[in-house]
Length: 288
Image 1: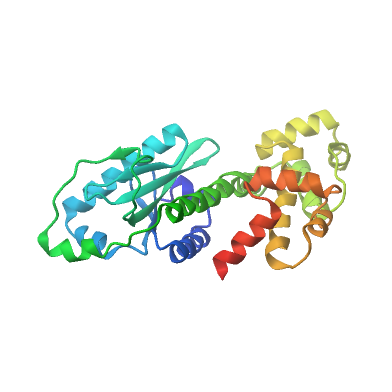
Image 2 (image 1 turned 120 degrees about the vertical axis):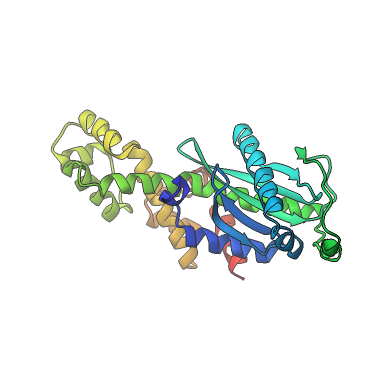
């Protein structure tokens, strides 16, 4: 049975993005659901951790550490840093969908000289002598690089938790057999005319109902108001243009229906936590 995270996220796409992040930062990453079930298996895993987890009790303790820290991160709604039983620094970034905690990205498996920002240190345990050499080979990462990696994951998660989820929930609603034809007609119009000025009054007229009734009907079916849906759809289209073309940001804004580039800049950042240029640059760096 698919987890809540898997219902709304393209797992392969997110896994690919995490893999790029692992290659760029040298850190290991995995994704677990709230109960500790693995959604995305560890990538770039440290050899020490790989060997140590062959012991089932060690593997259980590792997952327990992550789940405990992930719950703490979910409660505080921020990234949580911890040192595992072998004094290895890890972090967890909680993922929320519509306010529900559905998964966490775990990263780390490196040694970093950070003590002031560690939220919890688990009781230390001894490991088998045969692992001593592998322990000495665990990567040592500079503090700044480690924090930069956590910020990269946070940006990825924030982007997933807002625009993409919003659109997928709405799309699932409109593709349902129970959807009202009047709403489907309006959504189709938005998808085909997002570059033009669109108002609730236009859509209501198209659906042959009053504007007030249409607004309530749209929210009931789509779980989002019509203005937010139009904006979210335009931002999603803008992301595609930024990734797939070399068009200037102002031109992209115009193509997706924003008359004021400055306003587009503010709205894009609100929905993605990045400016249009920063979004384009981050993806370019990830793929380089």
